[in-house]
Length: 125
Image (cartoon, rainbow, N blue to C red; front, top):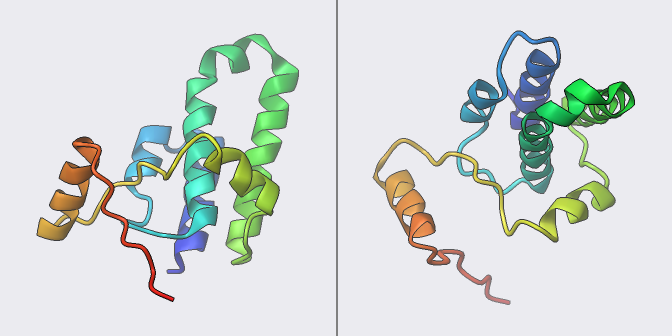
């Protein structure tokens, strides 16, 4: 299954209350470099973090649900999320905290990240 289609389905499962956010993010594609998936991850995490506000403000809840549904629809079609959405998250987060592969390579990526050591290699021109 295409990673973007998988993420679209995970978002929908959260929106219809068939899956909690934590369960969904644990099922995200491992070690992806896809900026659209990173943005979707952040949007989903913010959805959970805003739970209190969502309960108090019906309009905010509806707008956030529509926003996540839009992200889901774009990803389901295999499209890139609009640059403004990606940039909005990138200016606050260097990357998404998406789980790493469950092997030695993934362990060390998580370990270095925990130690706050940048393991990203610069591409050669």
